[in-house]
Length: 120
Length: 111
Image 1 (spheres, rainbow over the protein chains, first blue to last red):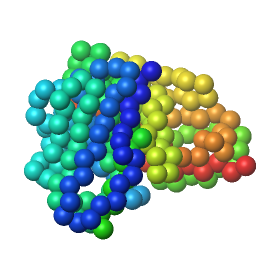
Image 2 (cartoon, one colour):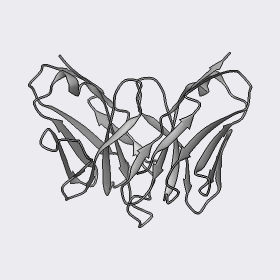
Image 3 (cartoon, rainbow over the protein chains, first blue to last red):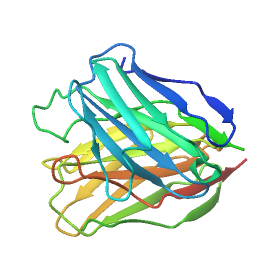
Image 4 (cartoon, helix red, strand yellow):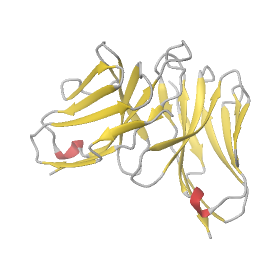
């Protein structure tokens, strides 16, 4: 159980275009979803946290107008990279949490397989 | 501000060895600590989750311990295999939605 999928797994786009990445929890309801970014040979950095039906909370230094996050249902969150530039090329990973512990932030996160974005 | 460090950054061992990976954190007020493995170009696979009230968790050949007072967690891998080769990451959860990944340890197990 606790499977999280991401689509697409790999995307190449031209500079200035927008790219949408989907994150789905397949067999559980994800009350909270997280988006991470990983640059080559670096660890993952949390970009934003989103609760179903609420606006996402962005980490310091992450532009919310550039990285649009929508968490419209308990099984789907999307990350849209708007007006992508080459410096946005990275590995984007989402994770989902079912909130079963009853304490915000204390639950196991289940990670998607990631999306490699290359902006030309 | 929570800082999470993993030592060593890279490790190469012959098959069959028992090994220990370390994760150190500066703020002991954590909710839990989770260990993951990441294969090259892939996502993360959760290995073990230790809640703040626990001292260790075991799964197969893996054992993770947590010592909040010293700000340390260790991941013990018994009888290592080439398939264990990956990057191992620890994730500290401290405070509401405060998630900090460690710097990672790249493990290579030689056949």
